Amino acid sequence: MTRLTDLAEATSPSLHGNKAAGLARVYGRVAVPAGLVAPGGWISACLGDEARAELDRLLREVTRRAEDDDQLLKQLAAMLDRIRLTASQARQLRAAVADLELGPVLMVRSSSADEDGTSLSFAGVFDSLINVEEQDLEQAVRKVWLSAFSPKALLQYRRIGRFPGCDRMSVLVQRAIQPVVAGVAFSEPSGDCYVEWTAGHGGDLVAGLSAPTGERLSSSSAAAPGWRQQLQASVKELSEGGSGQDVEWAWDGQVAWIVQVRPRTADLAGQSAAAGLRIAPLYEGDAHDLVLGQCADVYTRIRSKRRIARAIAISHGARVPGGWLANWDRRGSVEVLTAWSRQLPHRLVIDSSPTERQHIIDSSELADTVRTLAEASPEDGEFAFLCREYVQGDLALLSTVAADGSVYVESSEEGLLAVNRGLGSAHPMTLDALAALVGPDQARTLESTTYEHARRLHPRTALEWVVNEATLLFVDYSAPAAELTAPDNQSALSGSRVLSAGVASGLVQVLEIDDILTASSIAPIISIAQSISAENEALLLRQLRQRLSLADSGVIVAASRPIAVLSMLIGVVEGFLFEEGALLSHLGILLREAGVPAAIVGTGNLPHEGSFVQLVHGTVISSPDGRRLPAGS
Image (cartoon, rainbow, N blue to C red):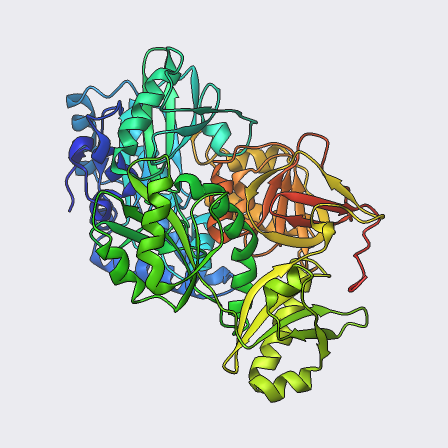
């Protein structure tokens, strides 16, 4: 497709990009600035078939290789230099802008088919330009096109194992807004939302360059007149489909404009088991289309603790019990619950609220149990509950790393529940004895998983296992009180916020945010005079790696703000600590997608250079002398 499209009609993510398609879907329902879309097919049209094929080849080669190849990058740079609007394209663009009366000042924004999707956001990776004068429109469109192939974008594509297609970057041109206040809002299916905002443009906020003001807007109470009232109404409208969204907005003194609607990422959409019942995995992904209801706290607590631990266990070959979040439409039939129960393990644990927890039942009892819990619930509509596989097994095991560095195992025939509550006894078991019971491969899995948890979670982590019919299953883990209470030689930082959940440990390297790093992070929303060239961006990446000793393992980067350029360190360092920052900053979104732990600790609270820190779901424990806790101490 090679024609310009009015934003209201640009509903195809593949043809118009996800940003434009997202706004087109809500156009007319909420206030969206008028605009048009130049399709990604224009890039091929300005190159020609032969050059386009060569560009595809170069992009595949560059993103396929683990390290940069200078010769390939030079060839790619030469090819990208040929990407320019044709005279015909420029005439069409100027005429359409005039017909829609979008000028004299414009926003020229990326709308890639790869960004703002349901599983990946590419937040802050591509360029969007504000306050573009009409005479600079063609130059601005070219800058956005080229951002699809920048070093930062290629690094992200390489990280996820894909390459950027030539025709996937459309460009959204809209009437510019001059905001008094701008920010982000995280909407919930209920219509409530959490809002972070700042004065002026929201670019500094999402780029991590400014500290936000945060507040909640409840759908059950009227918001104050002005932008809050209008934003509340827009969020309620966007939540009518029962899904949560990341919303970027701007208030120009009269209208709260919606400038971006992004699905929550790192998500798995709710899956319908049948009409009247929606389910999603409890631990993998985020069920952004499902209601959490009264089990929200339980859901968050279980996931935040076990998600990373399960991922580590699975990566080492361990089996894990299943778990699901379910929404049952109580106005419908219980037969859907009965049908689903036939697909589930024999024994289950059901949670529906902080007071209705750990109901251990047979799967045949699922329908009656859920119906009883739903009838006692004060909420209407869909009833949310957690359903987890309960495995008692033939033998319970606990494993940890001992003071001498070996893996120590205890076993009990009385079950994990009895052992954890101090009601049962446990006895030492050698790895050889375990191998005789479950086989050498599973014994090695327990050993390697225990070492990895000690390295990544806590050196004194105790892992909980169950042996069921000669099969080893990883169930949970527990850490000593040091998770929340620091040992004698350590201090816990209070008042920190979780930017990205997870567990990490390592030595702190403090990164000073200077003008170069700041300038590079303005790219997500920039003026045409502020953009950074591909050459400078590649140089910046090399400088960033030189400023930090990334050859060392276990690095925790500490910086004042979650600036966007730090996304280049995802997969390179263990975690991040920031003094201030927005929960919905572009870097925050990317960190949550990648599962990289990060916390906001408050101004003046960053640990010192060389400190050894443990980051446990936002709780930061620091050892100022850089010493690690001895294993088993």
